[in-house]
Length: 252
Image 1 (cartoon, rainbow, N blue to C red):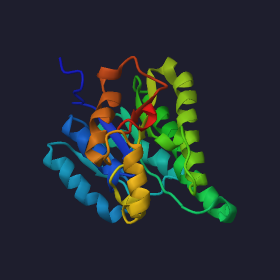
Image 2 (cartoon, helix red, strand yellow):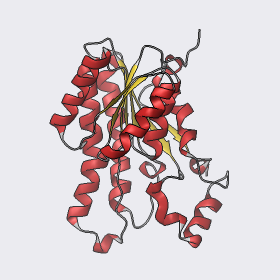
Image 3 (cartoon, rainbow, N blue to C red):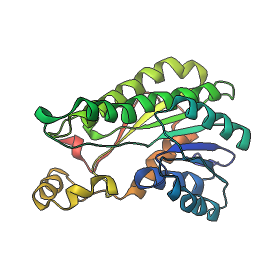
Image 4 (cartoon, one colour):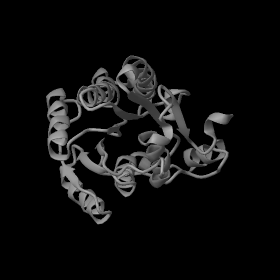
C-alpha cells in the first residue's frame, strides 16, 4: 500500500497560478488527485490545468478572489459537484507589502491581513463545511517561518503568518472530531516571483543565504513532498502542527 497515493481524492488549491501554489497543485495531481485551481490571476490557470491534465488528472479552473466568502463557498460546492468530494484544501494565496512600520498605511496593513489571514480562515471554513459531509479531509495552510520569527519592514506579513499558524492550531482542535486534519506548511525563502525584490538586493540576499544552514533558497517543487505528506494517509495522525521547510532556518 502506498501511503502517499492520492488517487480518487480531490484537492482545492488557492494561489494556484504561480509559485508555491502552482507547484503544489501539480504535485498533488502527480500523486493522483484531481485539482480545482483558484487564483485572482485567472489568465494563468489554464496553463496549470494543462500540466495537471498531462499528469493524467482532471482540473477545474476557478478564477476568483479569496477574500470573497461567497465565492469560496461556491468554489467548494462546485468542486464537490464536479469531482464528487473535497478531500484536500491548500490555502496558498498570499500577498506582501514591504515598508517601514512607521510609514505603513492602515489600508496596506488591512489588505495583507485580509488576503493572508482572513481568507485562509474563510477558505478552510468553506472546505470544512463540505468535508464534514464527506467523511473528513486534510486542510493545509501556508504559513511561513515569519509566523514564528520576525523580520523588519514587513509588519503586516509577519502578523498575518503568525495568525495563520495560530488559527491552524485552533481549527485542528475544533475539527478533529470530524476527521478533518489541519496543518501548516512553513516555508523559508523560496525562489518565486513573491521574493523577486530580494533577488535584486545583493546585501539582503547574502544575509538570507548566510542565515540559512543549507546556504541556498528553496525551489517551489521542494514544497511538494511535504504537501503530499500532509494531504495523504501518511500523516493520518498529524494535526495542528507546523511543518518547517526552511533549509534549517528555525534550527538556530
